[in-house]
Amino acid sequence: MADESQWAVPVEFIARHRAAYYAIKEYEGDIAESLRDDTLPLFESEEYEIHDWAANNMNWSDVQCVAVQVEKPNVDYEDGWCNGEWSIK
Image (tube, rainbow, N blue to C red; front, side):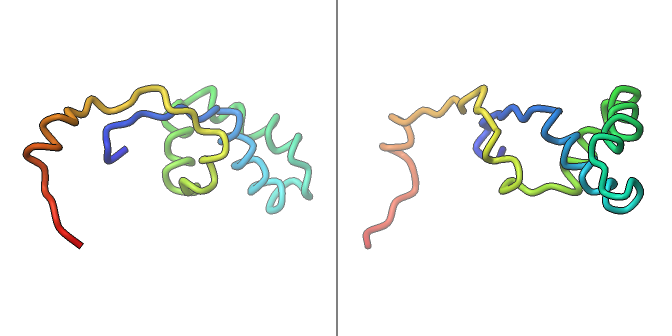
């Protein structure tokens, strides 16, 4: 993220999102079939596809409910307090 924090999102969540999309278009609404026959084989064969789907078809608001922060930014709050930008409002 922009603040250098890192977040983990379950691949299963991303896979289900993709499967639901293609279930409507190609599997008569059957998400389980779309997941089994299309999304899982794709994600297992090429990890890039996981990132590609998430980055190009999902928003932060889609994954925020399952995202877990795994690394916090290394911020020097003392320096920020003394030398950071400031304003009076």
